[in-house]
Length: 166
Image (cartoon, rainbow, N blue to C red):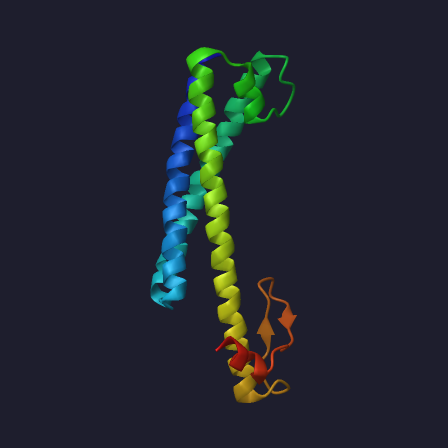
């Protein structure tokens, strides 16, 4: 089991490295959104896709390692959480994996916060754009707009909304 725990620690370390790159990318995305840098956003999205693919591969590897650990210790049952695995370890293995896990959880929280801000910035930009469209075309004549799922989103903003946002 010692070898598998070391592999898990290495996996968590590599995952944290990818998460750090994702966090950096999301912060650059925020700057590009605020600066209205459309070309930069395209490049950032391509980088995001690459990093998410790496994170997905690492997660698949981590789940396989978790299953190997669980099969070697009946106390874990099936699909144990990483915290449960850590709690069963002793000595330096426990400490190393716990620190890596805590770092990874912290990074995930930071990514969540930056993504939430990015979403709000994008939502505000879209609201402003919708208001401008309504102002130019009038709410009843505005071109059809769509939500992220591709469903028709009837114009709900008025010119007063644009003035309020501006």
